[in-house]
Image 1 (cartoon, rainbow, N blue to C red):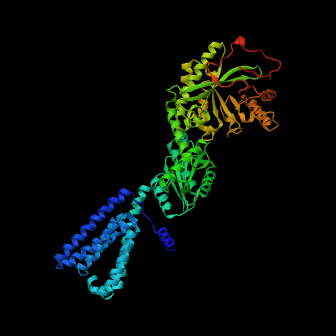
Image 2 (cartoon, rainbow, N blue to C red; image 1 turned 180 degrees about the vertical axis):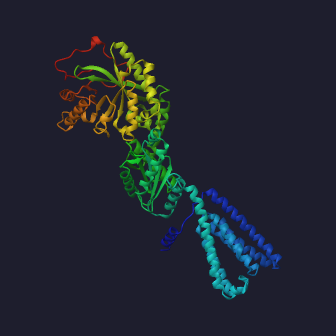
Image 3 (cartoon, one colour; image 1 turned 30 degrees about the vertical axis):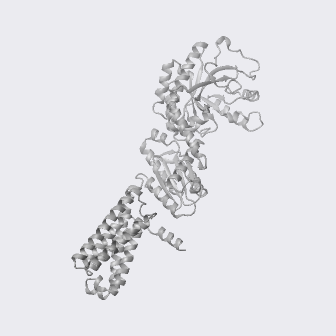
Length: 621
């Protein structure tokens, strides 16, 4: 019961910052020096006022004795600050006694209250109030002439005890307000008004210390926020962050705290287990599902969220909890973004592996670890290889072949994809130009542009430079972009695609049908090619709905005068169905796997096969 009462009282009282250890120690040492000096000074004062040496010694001991408790082994902040405060207040009591209750002697007490406020804790204020009530009330009743220096107080000691108690309480509140107002200047994010990292960690540490149950932290990071800053400007980015912070605040309880850690990173400390925190995270995802309107234009916001609770942490520390939530957030990003991941054991090792791969990626181009493989694109009616898609491969010196699905997202996240993309573009266009000269006919090449590349300021000049350097005609280069890049800022993406198309290159919408623009945006895009995602092609001929969907995509593309390429064709049956649906082009293992340029050899005009009566047979190159 006492513990519960203490926790309830501690929660009700407004609290100052949990001072860093170095700061607290420095202040504590200063208070101890003052307390020790006062003990010695009061002894000298007693002798000068004609008191006996024994009395002077006893007064010195009365002031100095509480300081013994500050040196006890294992003494915490609470005991040490209380002991030092007891010494300060004892000095005030002794001074009042030596001065026979002189009113001016009482002023020393308020100076000691101010000095004990350096601890930024309620305990010294409570002790000061208790000393006033005990000394002025009890001792003042028994020995009024030793406590009060005027007749009114000597005749009504409890009345003046209450008066002095009110002054002490007012002084305490003034000190509390002063430090709290001063702290707020350094504990709030100036843009959003949310708590900053320092305040979040202090709040988390306080909750971990007080609560016997679990405490959780959410770590939130906006997906692809850099693209918003780059394409729309930092002023729009700031307004977006402010709007997002308001939506996050609307998803939490009054006992939880939302903080902005910096940039596009937010955190929430939740009084509860991971399950309760995950529910908060799902509410945040729901709140951000609707686009944010800034300057009259809608911006879609996606967020990756990591959740960690104190039961999964190795120790009950705020730093560990935030780190674990951060690790879970990065896993959410690498798993596809816009989702919630709860921390589990083993994630730290996975994060270390990921960090090592990102570091290795920085030097992969210079050390010749990256290679471009080429997969043929076949014109189905004639069975002719008309071009190739350039696909990136990484042969790690220690890990061997790293799958693209593993390292491409890391390159995107770290920004290395921009440099790598330039290298791939130069390699692919140069190879296509050489093949065209050797084959005596145009050989097209398709190169993927990542979302980060697409919104890079130099993407148009990069493509132009690659074409000039290689000598490849612009019409033989196809730049492939996924539908997902359209969700952040359709207008900005369309402007970039138009600029690229203005160079004479072709634009292909990759993985069509799996993203966001399937029908509503397709008519607005400056596109030339639609690539049907392999997930639809794999089900062709199985009696499912994929045949109807593929037929609809082909018909839609035909009405918009777009070329169609089916990806992932691996069987004769899929080939046959695509032929009946009048799909013009296809890629897949049926026609050829991605291989190095030295292995692939485009056919010369004399080697190109003539049309066959039955074009649905497999064509391998």
